[in-house]
Image (cartoon, rainbow, N blue to C red; front, side):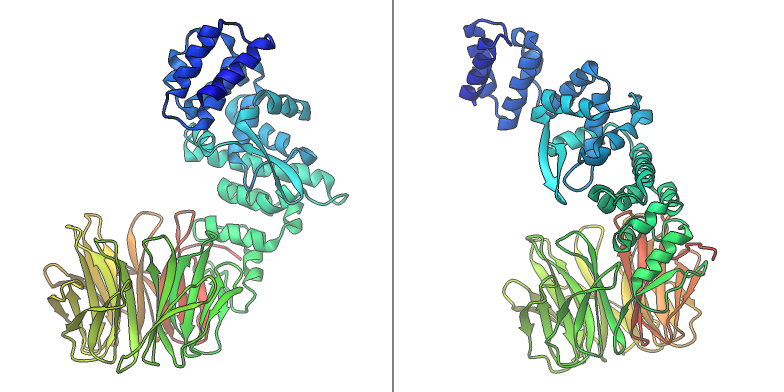
Length: 586
C-alpha cells in the first residue's frame, strides 16, 4: 500500500497537481501504508490529497479517519464545488437494483426529486452527472443491468453514510418523491415509448418504500397499467398489505395475481387465495428463500409438499417422497445460515428437504405410527435439534448433525398432536406438547425432564403455540376438540385464561404482533372462521370468513415492512393470506 500511495502522489506531483517535497510525499506514503486499513482507504486518501493538495501538509485528520469518514469529507467537498452533487450522490444510495442509469434522464430525474429534502437545486442535467463521475471517480462505480449502463456507489459504507443522515420517515418521503417523479416523467412519454427498464422494475419498489401516499400516487396514474402486475403485487405484499387501506386499483392487481377464485376485499376480511390443493391442507410453514423472498410450504392429504411464491401463488418446488398424508411441516434453521424443511407423515417417516431445489436430504424411519408433529430449534451449543411425535404416544428428540436420538420423552397417554419450543427468561429451552389425552406437557428437551402437566382441556389438544409477554416471559396457548383456548404459565403450571366461541373443535393457533404492539392470538376451527383474540381481555377482536369449510391450520407471516399477515389452510384445499383489520371499501 505504501508503494501505491508513493507512486500516485509522485505522479500527481510530476503533472503539477501536487506541490510538496519528495520527503513529505514519502512520509505520507509510509504513514498511510502503516495503517491497518483496507486498500480502498489508501485509494480514497490519495484522491482527496490530490483534490485538496493542502492536506499533504497537515495529515492528522486524514490519518485519523476511515474510508466512511473520507467519503463524508468528499461529499462536503463536492457539494461546495456544485450543490447538485449532494443530490446526485444521495440518489445513488436510494437506488434499487444495481444502480441508476443516465439513459432517459433517470439518474437526473431521481436526484432532482430530492431537491426539497436536501435543499439542493431542482434542475440537474446530464452534464452535471458527467462532471461528477469524473471528479468523484473513486466513489462511483459503473455497472450494468437490463441492457443499460448504471451507476452506483462504490462501497456499501457509502450507502450507510447517507442512510444514517436521515430518519426512516424522511427517507420514506424521499422514496415517495422518487416514485412520483418517475411516474410524471413516464407519463410524458405515454404512449410514444416504452418505460425505461429501471422504471419498469423498480418503480413498485420505490412506491413500497414510500408508503401509503406513494401507492395512491401510482394507483392514480396511467403508468400502473404499463407495469408488470407481478412486481406490483410482490411489493404491495412486502410493504403494504395489512398495514393500511390500499387504493382499489392496487387491490385489483393483488387479487388478479392470486390467480385463483375466492379472494376477498370485504372491509374486515381482505384475503388472497394463493394456493389450491387437490385435497385438505393440514400443514403450513413460512420461510425466507435464498433470494430473500418469503415462501410458503403447504402440505396435506395428497402427500406432496408444495413450495409457493407468497405473492403470485406460483409453485417454485414440489417435495415428493411421502406416500401418505403429511401432517406437519416445520422450518429447520441450520448454523450455516441455510434453511431446510422437516415434514412428518402418516407413512411413519420424517423427511428433511432442501426447499429451494426440492431435494430430499434425509429420511428418518423406524417410527411405529403416524408422525403428527415436528418441531426444531438450535440449542445453546449451536446444534440443530429436531423433535417429533405422533401415534406412538412418545416424543423423540434428535440431533440433526449425527442423526442420533438424544432423548425419549414419556408422559402422554394418547396420541401427541402438537409441539412448540420456547425460551425461558434464563435462556434455557423448553418444549410443550399436546395430545389426545387433553394435556399439555412441558419438557426440557435436552435432559428429557418433565416439568409440568397442564390439565384443563376436556377433549384432545390439537395445536399449541408460545405467547410472548412484554416482560420477557413465554406463556403457552393450547386449543383443541372442546372448542376452548387456554393460556398457561409453564413456569408455575397454572392456567391464566380461557376463551371459547367456536362452534366445534379448534384445529390451529398462532400469535402475531398487531400494529399497536399488542400480541394477539389467531385460531381456526371447524366452524370455518379465522378468529382473532386479545389474550389480556379474553375478547374476540376479529373474525375472518372466506374458507369453504373447516380451517385446519393457521400460521403467522412476518413481512419485510414489519407487519404480519396470517396464512390459513382448510378442507377446501386452499391456503389464504389475510390482512387482519384492513379496511377496503368496495
